Image (cartoon, rainbow, N blue to C red; front, side, top):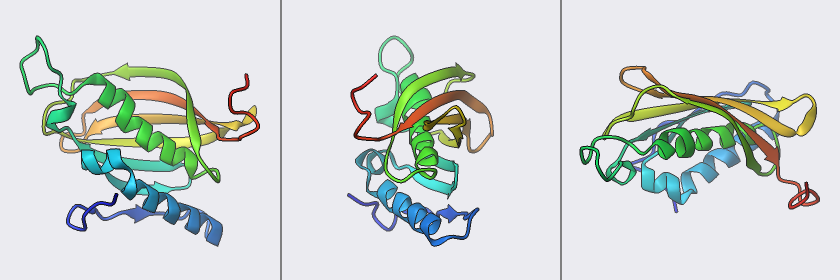
Length: 171
C-alpha cells in the first residue's frame, strides 16, 4: 500500500557519505516507509533520513485517543507517544546503519513529559549508533515533540539488534 500522491510529504534525504550503497539503502528505506500499512493509516510522513538519523511526523488522530473516564476525544494514548511513533523513527534510524532489518529488543528508558492532544502534530526524531561492545546492537535515543509549539512530549532510549537468522530465537 502506498501514500496517495496528495498525502506525500517532501522528504529531505541527507547523505553523510557519498557512496552509492548508502544512497541506495536510504532510497530503499524511504520507499519501504511509504508502503507500510500503519504509516498510511496514521498519516505519517518521513521528514528526514540520513545515516544514523530519522525524523517522522504524525498527527494525533481519533483512533489514537484515550477512551474511558477522561474527557472523550482529548488525550492521545501513551503507547502511541512512547511506543509507535518513536519506534518508527528509531527502527528507520537503526536500519540506515545496517543492511536488512533491525529488531527492537529493549526499552532502555522512557520519560513522559507532557500529554499529547487530539489533532496535535508530533515529530519523533531518533539518533542511532552501533554499540561498540556488541556490533549486533544499535543504541537509539529519541525525542517526541510538538511540531507547532516545540514542547517535548517524551524522551527515551531503545536498543535494536540486527536481524541475523543464526541468532533468532537464541539467547
